Length: 211
Image (cartoon, rainbow, N blue to C red; front, side, top):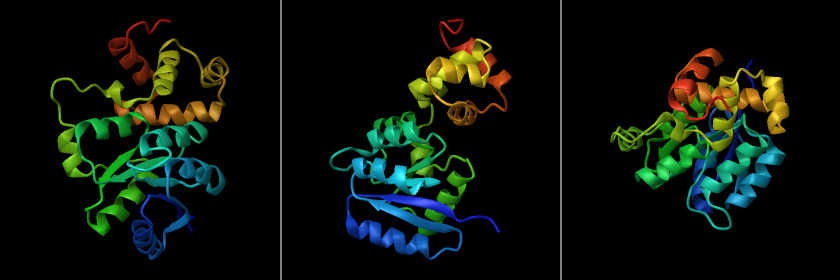
């Protein structure tokens, strides 16, 4: 039997957390392993509870959701962060996705949609509220690399230079496992299947890729 999805719940309103925890814990395949009321507490909780998925609010005290997302993923790149917020403006969405969030939902979404999004994120998919997806529709300016973090761009550049994962890890001072996690997200964002396709994409779209 598959292990349940370990979920960390982050929101600065206790009533919201309580309601979400009740909904999520009522399922057989999701377990809430921790809760946090601000971004800094979320970073610390993620280190101790080792979640598969973090459900992350954006507007919080101490550390906001975007900064918290960056820190959580710096510690554990394999974690899937899904934003759950009331804000759907383009800037907020872009900031959150650029920080590494894999999904973005609005707080008035249907409970069934929320549960489906958690499961989808845990499987490595990209759950986006349709209203958010519309905000991201092309204005002629949107580029896939805008949704990659600076570290992911670094990894992509080194792949394009022909370095193996172990070499990339040594160059950047990170583990080979972390390199693989970064590459997995790069492949998803660029919609490519392997490192060769990613390297070709980088040569076409990134400047100074030859290092």
